[in-house]
Image 1 (cartoon, rainbow over the protein chains, first blue to last red):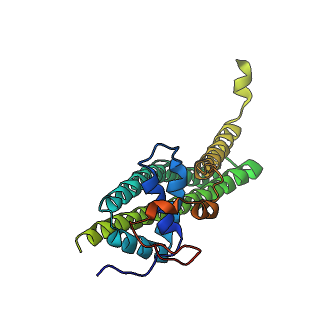
Image 2 (spheres, each protein chain N blue to C red):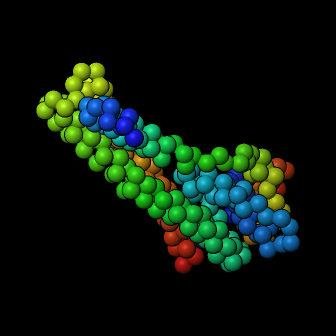
Length: 168
Length: 70
């Protein structure tokens, strides 16, 4: 049943309007459209409005165009997720391993008497600090990665919902 | 080249360990903080207000400020 209630002006309707504007001859600000899409994906209400507007649209091509714009955003988000995953696996893991090795080496050498005194203190202390920092950095990188993955999943869900609203 | 013999093994080892720790700390922190790219300041609210809503005529009913349903 198509709804007769007018849709309020907001991010969802603005995105539809800009997407319809795209078929014209004027300048398109892709970054602006991306920002509006980002705002929609994060806000539950705007997502629902977009799905409902796509379902009620008289023009059957509008949902397809919306999905295309959202998929462009999805491709960028996937890029970011993969980049962050690489960073975590390459830099984060390396830093942790080097720090732990330095820690073991410094404690061993201090115990065997090769390093002693102030320089020994700084060597062991520095290695401990390096392990702490490396672990903290790794945790942060994993958190960034989680956030990027969640954003990707939410955008995928929104695209799937818009497509599903077409079958109704 | 004679001056390298003056470096004791203690100085070498502890210097090496401290150097490695410093590389780990500086390297991992810079990898964490560098990717924060500056984003262009876009006023999303102004863009939403100025959107070409006239394009939505005959596509979906939109609330207009005159409260007439299109």
